[in-house]
Length: 349
Image 1 (cartoon, rainbow, N blue to C red):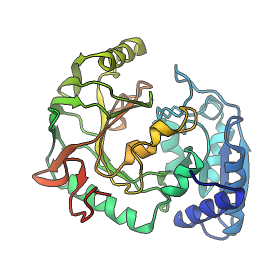
Image 2: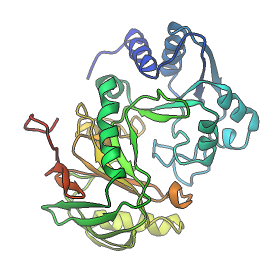
Image 3: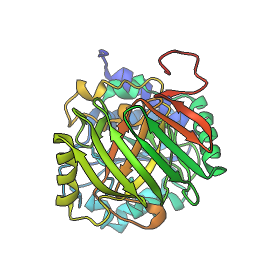
């Protein structure tokens, strides 16, 4: 771990906001809740001032409508205090850039789309300091993920296979490819620091996914201990078999009481070369969002629950990060055995 100080955080946040193209005279809102990290609020505030921006730090009451503990799950319903308060929403819509330091963000909440339509840029930040600094993005990351988005946009089928037994066929028509590059530099853009990934929102996927030991279940933030097989038909999980991890997933689906819990959400691959797969094991669950796992270069990331393209609102959101997969898009291999293609480094990072 790094020995970090307030100076390190201020420097990192300043570099990050400059990647977001924050300009002198723009307006920044640093959004926090009582449980947000005070050092992040101070660093974001100071960084915005260093960039010559007008800045407001707004702390709103905590609490989320998601029926589960707020442990950086990525479900993204956001804070009830913002969801139900038009004054808070108007403040965010009036900003050029919102630095979202809340515990869950508004990743899958319709109100976030309303804020973005006003032209506001939103940067979500919630991982541990060492994770942020180690994975500080660069301008080249955006070009890399945009190339992946363009490949998905002009293609029809994504095929995912693994030595463990995964064999999934994904229909890409209408899947609205997207990306995360770790900074929000365009008007109406949301992004997440840290993250570098390509994803899409397909409707139809068929085949099977086999989780191997060492794959990561989020938001449980647990490594898979024994193989789990999930049968997929029409974009829905029809059957889950295996040991304790399979029982965990099945119980989550059943107890959620959510009709979309077993439906696939976004799928894609990670491109964050600085990510550490073991990071999930190094921190307490309260400390991490888990972006090392979600965006690790060469992973296959798939999820369940919310699906904005199909209008599915859901809190039953799992992200499952897998290593050792091969991903081909209309026959073009982008990941082979867990390594990004075209990478001369033997570890794919």
